[in-house]
Image 1 (cartoon, helix red, strand yellow):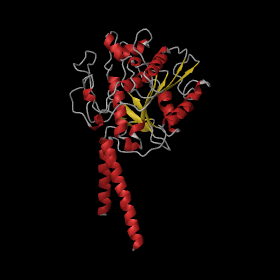
Image 2 (cartoon, rainbow, N blue to C red):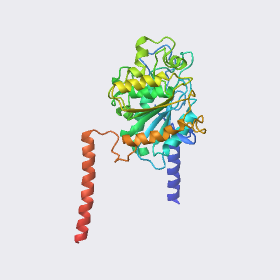
Image 3 (cartoon, rainbow, N blue to C red):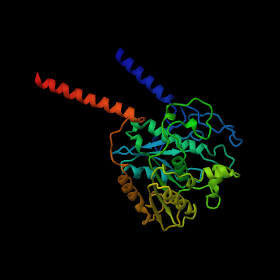
Length: 368
């Protein structure tokens, strides 16, 4: 009887702990939400800009706190993607097709995905969330996945980003504005609050997958509403250049798979060609698939998750083949998420000694 009482008490305590957790009972598509800014406050620029009236920290507010929802592959190979749906930096209208549908498709390739619900601006450019809030959300998402890699069976060295339309701009932003695990040292100051263990992980993605992306903030071919929502109506020339990601490519930029419509009626196709040209000039490995369509936001182009465009519906399998050729889908031994040469050597030594110990004990048993 006492044992039963103790067991019940234990279950009650565990239930109370789970109920107190910020993610408990908050779901998306039946999957638990994982808030990104819980152990530390979400940062904002210093000095605090006039357009950011709300600096309160609400850990469980799905609008004031960015979050992820994981779609785990049935047969995972260790690869992962942070998926960033589009919506012009005004909303996340692409969530169903570019988020959920895309995740289900990537799962069939063994890739575990994490759909990012990032904060967005407003059409007048005066909302509480403008750059760098979106960039910080994207960077934090990549760090978070690496920090929790073991929990999801993910190789931290094979965490990429996948972005569509405005989400494509966010993906290229993370891929061209990154640090190796010390965000406070970046050129944009952080809110002076204590960091956490997630900050120690690099936010540079291993690869980029881009669908009909916004890339530039150059007014001559940028997507106007998204530019205003992100940067406001009167951004400085320096900020425009900084967030025109075709200008931020370096030889160290991660490999890219890019597809787009050659007569896209919403985002100027020059966004894709300018980025491709920069990748080519800097010697960055990339594959580009242009499709003869004016449809924007065609996602999988299969008529289920996105407009039916048979010619364009080949891109996911082409991506799968490209990722395999690049080695991103090849299962590898998954080491601890933070490892340099020293810690990897230590890890291997520990494992090797363990195996030798097991073999030694088996040999001794056989001799008895």
